[in-house]
Amino acid sequence: MLIVVDPGHGGLDSGAVGNGFFEKDINLSVSLKLRDILEANNVDIILTRDKDITLGLSERCDIANKNKADYFISIHCNSFKDSTAKGTETYSYPGSISGGKLAKSIQQAIVTNLNTVDRGVKTANFYVLHHTNMTAVLVELGFITNKEDLDLILNKRNLFAISISNGILNNIGLKQISKSDSIEKLHQMGFISDYYDPESYVKWKDIADALLKIIGG
Image (cartoon, rainbow, N blue to C red; front, side):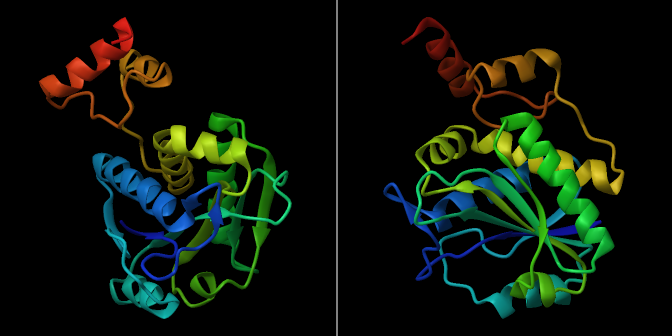
């Protein structure tokens, strides 16, 4: 099983700009977290970019096609001139049954876990959906031009990544490696900000950071 995760935009292409933030940076941040989570679930991952570089649409598709990926997940943020527009939407290529099912699974996971406005599962002839040879979806996390959406994405990037992973793994029938209840509770309370394998070693710095949050230091 090989999944290509595509952080939209990058380099000279900032993507949408809203409230002082660039879409390209948010896309990359969430994609890096998604990579770590999927790898922890024993899924092979390739990122189209793992840094702030300019990458054409055809290059993104070539990476997925040449590596014969099974799935292609493109991560984006939405924008609109009306700053009240908000919510999550997920796209697949028109006529792709497998793409539609994957898009629905990811959309439901994000909306359920983060309580974002459900803008639905949609189809579009986006280049990266049209020119990839595998099941492909494009996720619009929320609107970078909406302050509430942006704050949620910035503060819950890890939960967005976990939700996308949940949607992917549930859809393709892979058993998910679950975190212990105590770890999940600490994460929801904000004491743990990153994804951790419950069986892995924890650094003293991580323990110190969590303790300082608890005591308000």
